[in-house]
Length: 380
Image 1 (cartoon, rainbow, N blue to C red):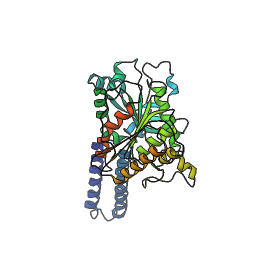
Image 2 (image 1 turned 180 degrees about the vertical axis):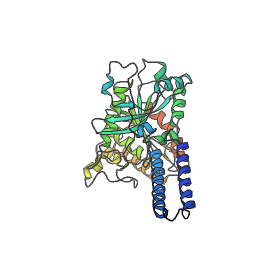
Image 3 (image 1 turned 90 degrees about the vertical axis):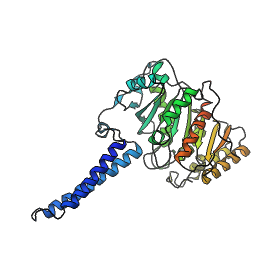
């Protein structure tokens, strides 16, 4: 059974209600000799079932385990690159968790759509391994000689990669934009940006090396394990905290990312109340991870950036206006696009409306010829 699906959650809710109601119904009906031990065991059972229900909710929110096999530690399907181009399978840290994924991909490709797969993305440099998602377009399965560009997608905080599939319907967006010619057939990789200790995708003074994992290890997994185009063939985008991460890592790794897009993001490190403080007392670390400080003081020329906010989200609009004004005043060489989604707020509905135009914009810098992109209204 799919541990991340709604049916399993409803089953757990039903079991929890049944145990709670059953305990209340028999509370005063136990024989006198068994009354106190039975009541004690009943309370333990209620607490255990409640803990399982809470664990199910957390697992579903973060996409940690998709099956009982993953939960018990059963070995996953090791990924052997299709048409490996001489890349030894043993060197990749990418593992496909979706059963019979190759057959699934060919069936989806026959219907003209890509496949969304569950993966484990390992990081030998960062020491981090997390569950994520992987989108492979139909072209990946219909032409085993094709090599493709890639886009990393960063989620918000709190959240996980499944927000892209469950709320933003990213597979449908990618299929549609690829079919229109506005986006090339591409590999989409959706890593978990943190391990529950939200840290803005940086190598903090204490804690995990999220930047190394996201900007070095995950792209290396795709480079080695999949048929990615060599060289600078990656773009990156994200929403909310993920938007901050996309712009920040894009500026810090222009050798990797050809473009970066932010949807309802922010541009000064440590300003999101939903995240912790990975910077400690280091002013230098905080400043060097603040895109607004970087464009004002270091004046980078790459990568091109696209920033979007929604009119109903005043905090994001103010952050975007400030960042755009500072960039155009202090760093005019940097290519910067700015747009506004009419209405909306800091919500999935607004982020879904902005996803296709943002994807189109960053895809212009991938090494492929494209049709004209969808255009949002410019930021006034």
